[in-house]
Image 1 (cartoon, helix red, strand yellow):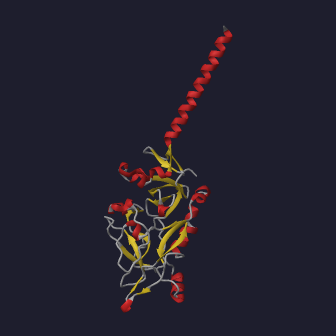
Image 2 (cartoon, helix red, strand yellow; image 1 turned 180 degrees about the vertical axis):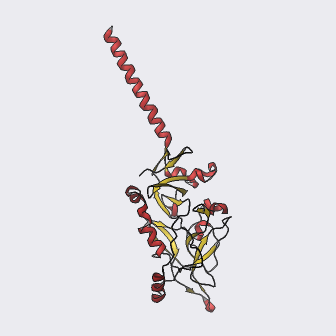
Image 3 (cartoon, rainbow, N blue to C red; image 1 turned 120 degrees about the vertical axis):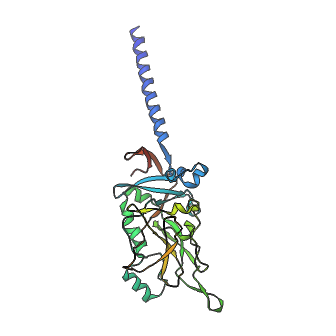
Length: 282
């Protein structure tokens, strides 16, 4: 009889332990998802506000929110992330030294994005803001850029609509991707991202104030040597900024973008007051 009771107690204990671990595993599965599942184009009509597509990643050890804009960037199985807020740092598109070098060599247009100072900074300094595991998972991505050339047309006209594909790990979005208008002389440098079908989604802040942010696109103006920026209270203030430093104007801010594998694990996690948010652990 005692032996029977002992066996029964043992079986009951095993059952309780199994139920505990099954419950814990179920809760863990409920708190975990894949990054592609919260992308804007994955949510469809269930999307209600930017918080639905927000994921946090540690940047210099501090949790920063990123928007998951698409699960299929440039037609590939990779997820595009955009920093939700403008960075505190402001970087020149071209330093005076790079500007002088480009002017003297005359091989590419002044506004050519690849190997601009801002491009170099993003892929050397900024990328090191992340942990080693995050850096290893940031993918090398093909992006469309202006080819840096002015192309002649009949009757002495010209255009700069030529594009090329370059590979970057961290980059800026383009005018075409955010739906900003361009002139007939400027290139279509990327595919429109559906998240930006509302202009107010272009509005963001730097140090708590609404500010303009750099795009990677050349922008034709009578001033010359200008690239596109976006900003304004309603997000409709598509404008331009000279690539060279101007002490009389504020530099636009930066919203870095990059891609991660679509099957990256995310988890609901409490990082402060206000409940749990999706994070990518280092």
